[in-house]
Image (tube, rainbow, N blue to C red; front, side):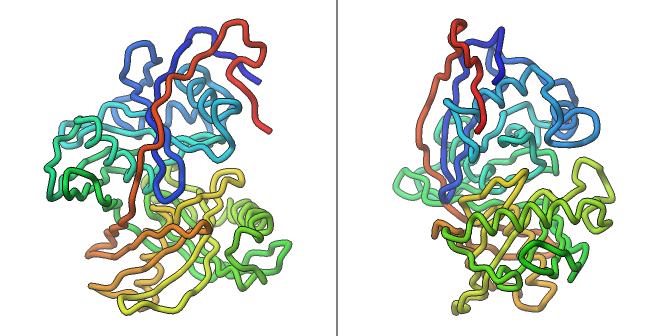
Length: 345
């Protein structure tokens, strides 16, 4: 349980991208605490705090707002969102600090798609009734783009173009309670570990989620000291963020077809196929020779939603999906509420 002594109302706009929630807060709105820093990456490092961990002890300020929005009774353990902040320069429309129940992340593909839809829906970025418009967003891992596709006056899809993805290690043996897995590592704005679920005797199904979550947490912990998880440019981008447990499905006429569940942070489950995680999968498939120019990965989630992904020159990836608004909220904190900002179970 925690309290927020000064903030009484927080307004949000909520979306879901392929089933994964995304709660948007305009952190430039009056009344919200500022985040020091000249760039989005610096602001991210500020809210994370010393040590570079996304699960640092409570620091107050804007992090209290995150806790308010992810904790019950206003949120839940699967909640995800972002603070919209100023961009690094006028080359982007705005910046974003991504957050979840345990802290912060340096990349979020499903969130970037939702932000693209939100920017158009709110008129922050003008868009045609028919055609497309690019929404440029500065995030801790760099500048990304959400191309919003429009037809008949509505948004029909969003294509997320990520920072370049790269493979950093292959077939790393990791012992888990379900057996030894061979894990591949790839960086795509954050570091992802990929493992075939069948190698652990598992299937990517809702019924198997407890075992998949346990395996994901074990793999993430075991890989903490592995050099393949380190990023040469920044400690902020180092360390395994998500573990992708995938299974092969029959290829489509356009390329590979896989289903996955991504376990990220401290055992959080991505309901979508994972946007930046899809970028990591694309880099691995391309290196294996299974995905070439003009081919797409059809990527399913554990709830049956779908992203399509493709790899371009220089390790740049594009991932396409849909995002829909689910609500607008004015969350309040009653000063007499003994539970204050809420709790986690």
